[in-house]
Every structure is written in structure tokens, then in C-alpha cells.
Length: 450
Image 1 (tube, rainbow, N blue to C red):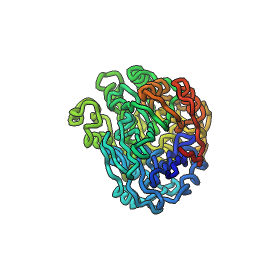
Image 2: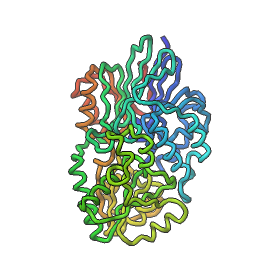
Image 3: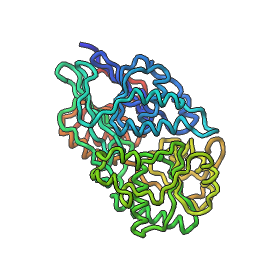
Image 4: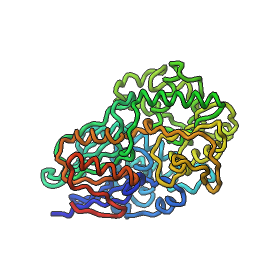
């Protein structure tokens, strides 16, 4: 029998840099290919080095388009990967935009890990696959995607390897929240599981209901506007933040908040609404994709802040506004610029929706830091800091437990990835509480036969 191995190059003991090498049936397949995110000094070298030879990888399977999961694909192509990238059709299109944002990093940032030409070359190697269609990578290696409900195109990945598909692997990817007004619920994958790979950066959390999260947001916006301040939201301009934007629009239409512009400060002028309209199958009521007033595609308050002169225009704003800017943790990119500009002013509010890696600017703000270092400058913290993980698109602990129960079982062995120490420890507790006896927390570079 050919040796079968899982090697964890990223997403192990951290929530970013997801990259798992599966060796089975004579193939070398990557599950995800993500960039590390967090403190610049800590991640720069990790994102430059290649932990494996891309030319010896046969295929890449992407769970979704987030940079922590798919952001490295153009870099692997740049360094010799010539295989096929398999992704859902939504992930294929969304990744093209997010990869472009990386390649078009603003001046002053560290050189990006790849250029626009690499993004174009990588996109030519991506094959969009529908959900629940088996794809054979080798005679004894087949996979299919299932809707993970996290962002447009997000997927859990089911693989079967061995004669007759004797070993079943389920990789959760990033599981979303059930009950989202915008996306389908995470799809169950019932049946016995030989190897489960599961992540949950908010496994330790309990998110509020969507209605409660909306009310909290309404209060924060109203109070910030009353102070004459701005809300800075470090986040990719396309992705989970669209639920945040949709909520702002809905609150305004209901007169629950004052009118306030929502600026998307991104170098890639493609709106998430445009992408969703290309994929009406991705939302529970596809006909909403063709409405322009109200609902998830309402753009009445949204303005594009990227392009020539965009930064100067936003810097000159002295009236209430919501500014959404990458990156999610505030260490780099346009988010770092706006944090440096606004943190010292008590009128403003910083809204953190994404998971914040330990040591990142965002995590320091959540932990109550009175000052933070951003790109070599020290910024005093006077602005209000608000955590709103309900808009992160990530399932919380109880929602993850519900998805695990949907497997039905038994689960013979589980690997816990994508989280800090607290989230990983809680995910281990949840799995053991659900009867999984063999639970492993891999470290970066560790390999496991199966």
C-alpha cells in the first residue's frame, strides 16, 4: 500500500497560513494555500519562504478565498506550481479580487509576495467546481465540495482515498453561522469519518443572535455619529464584511441609524454585490440578486474609496463615515493607515469583526492596550474599541458543536487547526465531549501517517 500522510505547514497552532499537504494514491495535494497574517515582523519571513517545492505539488483544493486560506496561490505559481487549483466557482471569482488586492499593495508597504502577472497566471490554473460533484484526482483519490456557509464559495472538503474509497477525510474549512440572512447554512456531511480536520478560531466564543448584533451595531453607529466620529473597520472589502454592510443598509432603511456613507478603501474596485450577482445560487433566495433597492445588494450608502487620489480624499474627511479597509488585523495595508490616523481621536470607533491573531494590532486593541506600534510609529489609543465577531462569518463554539453532531459519527481521529491556544483548547474539549477519543493538535511542519 502506498504511504498516506498529512503534513501541516500552516494553520497549525495559528489561525492563518492554512496549508496542509495530503499525500495519497500517488498524488501530492494541498488543502488550502494561505498567507500568514499578523505582526509584520513575525510573518514577513514566513510568507517569503517556501516550506515545500511547489513544482512537486499536483493539485490545490481551496476551502475558500480568504487570504489566510488562499492568498498564497499566485506565489506558488510564481515558484513553479503547474497543477490545477480546484475551487468552487464563487471562490474562484472572489480569490481573483483578493489576490489582486495583495498584488496592488499601496506604496510604503513591504513588497507583496507576488505581482499582478502572477495573479493572472494563477487564475488560468483555477477550475471552478460546483458543490457536491465528485472529482477524481487519481483512481483512488476523489473529493467533493460542500457549502460551508462562511463566505461566497466557502466549502468543506470531503475526500475518499484507497480501494473503494476506504478512508474518508472531512476538512471543515471555515464554517459559517447558521441562520445568516445572506448565505446558506453550513451543509452537514453525515457518515463515519476516519480523519476529521476541523478549525474554529471562535470555538471559545458565544456569538449573539443576528438580531442582537444588529442592535449593538445600531447603538455604536449612532453614538459615533453623535460624537462626529468615523468607524474604522479593518477587513477585506469583499467577504464576510458584506453582512456588516448589508446590516448598515438595513438599519438605515429602518431609520434605526442616521445616514452615513460606507467607504470601501480597496485597490481592486470590484464590489461584493457584483460578485454575488454572478452567483445567485450562493444565497438562500437567489432572486434577491437582481434587486437594487433594499436587501443584500442595496448600495445606496456605499462608495468606492480606492483608485487615484482615494487616500487623500478619505484622509480629508472630517464628517461621520464608515471606512472599511484591508487588512483584517490592522498590522498592514490600508487598515494600518486608517488606524494610525484615527486611534488617537476619541471621536472615532474601531470595529473589529475578524479573528485577531495573538500579537497583532487588533489583538492588542482588544486586550486594552493604551498604545500600539503601527509600521514603526506609536499610536496612542483614545478611540473606542468594539469587538463584533458576530459579523466575522465564523461559527462559534455551540455552532461548531452542532455541525460535528451532524456528522453522526463515529469520528475515529480529529486534527484541530485554525485557532489560537484558547480556541484550539475549546475545540478539543468540544470534540472529546462529542465522543472523539483521538484528538491531535498538530504543530507546524508535523507529519502524520494514516
